[in-house]
Length: 296
Image (cartoon, rainbow, N blue to C red; front, side, top):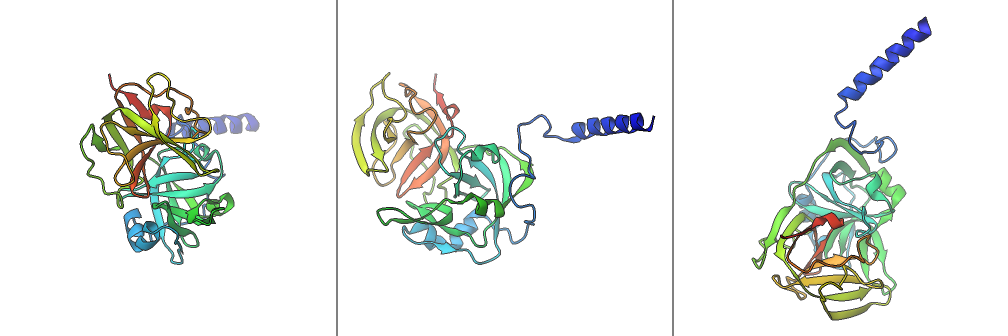
């Protein structure tokens, strides 16, 4: 009888625990398997304050700095590698701005889905940039000698973040509508989740990071052009927005993205994504094909 009583009691407790857990029916992760639960909230600064503190490192190519102070940021994951268009990094955002975090790991979306709030212990990590895109990670020197901050070992990353237990939705801010000029500041607003409305594809360019080969003025052919070339990452420009090295706006798609081979829309679209800084251009990184909305 005692065994039956204990079994019934355990069953009742389990039912009540399930009812009390607000995230019970939502896809999630076991927070005990990832991150560092020993991290406690202290000395939290905003992302904008962090960028201001290390303004030279995030704005000047080829330099970086190790963070030696006890500093933390608390932010929400806005993009990951869920459909392969973002590689070995995530973007995070708070109320003041956004920044990228380089992580040498695939399948990050499995434990850091969009909307997950995390607390990041910055001491010991490096801050700098990749092509002027503010990044937290570790130093990297390419085969051609270019120095940047890039992906940190995954074991190191696991030691430097923890979950806050909160999930929230970051609504994309309007970047521009049609031919209107954006009001975003490329130094302060780069990396944020945004939406570009009522634009259509004009032409593009191909780039192979291994061979450093660039093919410009790729024509857009309605019904044939795809998001990306099989051998090149691809940028497409818009009829309604400026292109070029300064102030240009492009949608970037990796040739490894799950949707790389899909045909581009022929009419106007609304594009949601992370508006990354690539030197002095805006580069939209869409997270999934669902970020592309055809305007009816």
